[in-house]
Length: 464
Image (tube, rainbow, N blue to C red; front, side, top):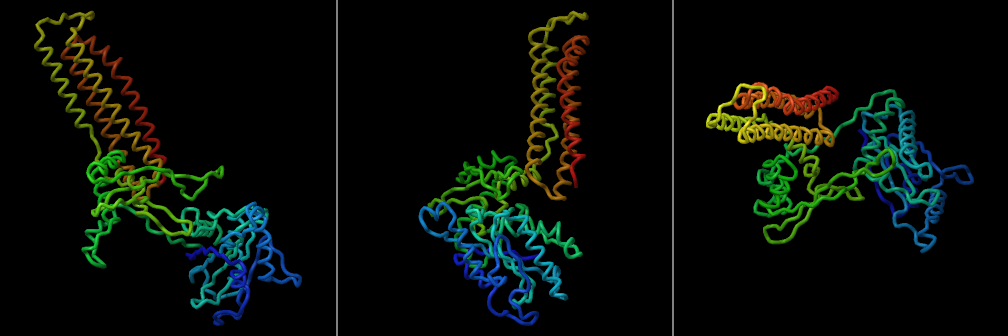
C-alpha cells in the first residue's frame, strides 16, 4: 500500500526546483531526476519545456488574485502544498521502469483530477532516485486556484477520513487494476477498541513508575466508568459524581462532506477534571490538527466508541423483574378477592367493586408500562446500531443479541398476558375477563408484534 505524505511549503519556488531541477540523487535505476511528469493549469516556457522558474511565476500570479492580497499586498504564508505518494514493491517492482513510471503518473494525475477542483494548479512528476529505490510521485499544488479562490486545505491534509492517505487508497481500490492489470491489496489499519485498551497501571513501565501522568489518570477514570455503566447518560453521571470528571459536548467535523457538499459532523466529548496536584486539566476525545497530528485521548474515547462498547457488554434483560412485579400484583388481586365479603353473582352484567377495579387497572397499567419500557430499550439499541458501523464479528454479536431480545420480549408478552387474564379470572366473571383482555391487552400485543416484525426485517437485511 502506498505511503502518502503532505508538506506545507512557504517557498513554492524551492519546491518546484526540487521536483524538476538537479541531478538524480541515486543513479542505480535512472540518471533522470524526473522520469515523467504532467501538470494542470500551467504553461511550458518559450522553448516548450517544463521550467521551475516559469511555473513559480504562474503560481505567484494566481496567489496575487486573492482579495486579501489586493487589499494588503501580502502573500500567503503557505504558498503551495507538496504531496508525496510512494509505492511499495508490491505495487511497482520497477522491473519495467518506464512502463511502470507511466502507470504511476496516470494513477496520480487521475486522482488529482478527481480529487482537486478543475481550477487547481498542480505539477506532478515521477521519480525513482531515492535511497530505497521506490517508485514515487511528487506533487506541487498551488495554495490558490487560478480563479483567485484559496484551495480548501482539507483536500490536501494528510490524515483523517478525507485526507490524502485515505482518499488515494480509495481511488486505487477502484482504479489500480484498470491501469496496471494487477489487483490492489489494501492494508487496513487496526481499529481502536476499548476492549483492547489496557489501563496504564497494568502496562510495563518504560520509565519511572512513580511519575504521574494526568492523561493516564483521566483514561483510567473514563475506562472505569465505561465498564460500570450501560448508557452514555449514566457514564457521564458516574464520571462527575464518583471521579470528578466533567464531560461537555460539541459537534466536530469528521473531515467528510455529504452529497450537498456540507461538512459531516459528529458529537465530540471534552473531558475536564483536577489532577492529583489540584491543577485543572482538559482534553478532547480525539481530533486531528491541520498539520495531521493527533490530539486528545484517542479514538477509543469518542462517544460512538463508548456507546458501541456498552452495547456489546450490556446484559440482556429477559423481563424477569417485570414478571416478578406482575406476579405480585396478581397475588394482590387474589388476596383482595378472597377478602371481599360480597359474593360475586354469576351474571354477564356483573358490576365489579371499586377495589377489584383498581387492582385490575393496576395490573393492566403495569403490563402496558413494562411493554413500553422494553420496546424503548429496543428502539435505543436500534438507534445505536444505525450510528455505529460494526465490524463483521460485531455484526454477528448484534444479530445474536437482537434475536435474544426478540425472544425475551415474546416470552415476556405471553407471560404478562397470561398473568393478566389469570388475575382477572380470579376477580371477575369470565365475560368480564374476555371483554377486558380483548380491549385492553390486545392493542399492546399487536403493537409489539408489529415492532418485532419490523426488527426481524431489519436483521434479515443486515449485510454480513
